[in-house]
Length: 250
Length: 276
Image 1 (tube, rainbow over the protein chains, first blue to last red):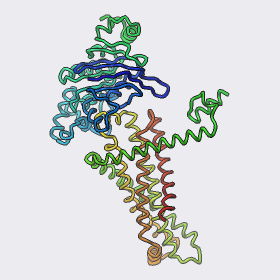
Image 2: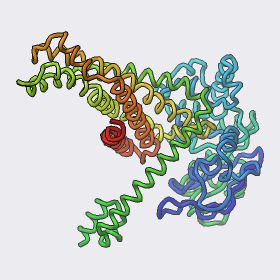
Image 3: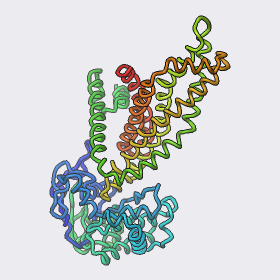
Image 4: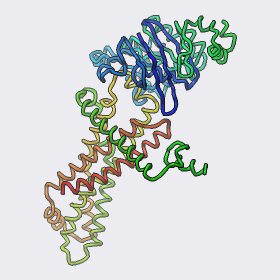
């Protein structure tokens, strides 16, 4: 379970998170919506300790992330797969080596046969051909990079998956493929996921619950239906602004 | 007044509203704090490096890769620089040693200059440009494209994966390159001296051996170890703390080359005072 309690974060004069309270239950997928630059990615990076809060607490599996010693933090991170917005693939390594680096168990990572099998398995899960393993990130399209990023994130069999804008910059077809992939992984792996996005339609599709982050706070959290029926002006404005009344009322 | 405030705020990177209050003491204080911050962070990085040495399975294979790239990759430019340095030293010795000085003295000056000073310092400066720039740009690009965040998010130590191999490779390979530079420099100096000074091989060898002390070689190597740390640690630090975007990478790369070059010259002065 992931829990953020009164998390504050500022960069210089810019207050990004202003007392965020946020929970994610085991096995569910929560979509975190919000306008660009509102601090969604910053919130996500608090969960695996890439960013520490100025005040407030972030708990993962009951452990206070900010106070974990180095080794324990590294161990916690092996349980949290993180899919970066632009893939963040290691460009000097092949796709195979990128995904292999995601195998976080040291014993497994040293077993070459296991690694080959696991990389193939992960590529298969994200609908990429085995031939992709020999390619380099520079040879891949945007959508393929995102899928390799997902493959790397799931290679270590994480308990949690954090997706940072998994569909941004993709055409609608590829965005739908990624959304379907997130749903498929949730079904097949049973991971707990947080999907950060400003794509309302995709967020409603993949999330068991949807949260809206505005002005440094979680403005509203609930099931897709609850958000759709919300009377909150900010929620309605955000949903209508991005996707129009047809989607909101669907 | 507004334009002046704007100019000051840009020049000293301070908020516009504080620009008119700027005075020299504040600026000096700000620079001191900035320097102290960098020193503290570098000290913390060194501490992390020592702590990460236990993860030798991670850094050892990567160190060989880096050492190959630093060592073999830099051989040509080091040879070229050392050859020119040896030749020019001989030409200048030919110009200065006009009369009244035994010609074998020139051989001593040439070999001593190359072993004590030119070999290590020029090799250090070459590597500051070649390796330092590469490390800062590499790590800076990894920082801005979130590759370093990705490594951390996989539960990997960035120090063991990225910093230790680079620092160790530079620290190990720079003394090796300095040995090559010394040999090439002295040889080219010798060849040039035969033309400029009309020195015989016997006189050159006699002069070189007459002034040579084994300690000089150790001093040269010890200096190069310090230079090796300087040309790798500082660029790694700059790369890891790169600002945003391509501009940030450019700034980090420039700062890495300038800082490590200045540090080499400062270390050269300090070590000469302490060890000679």
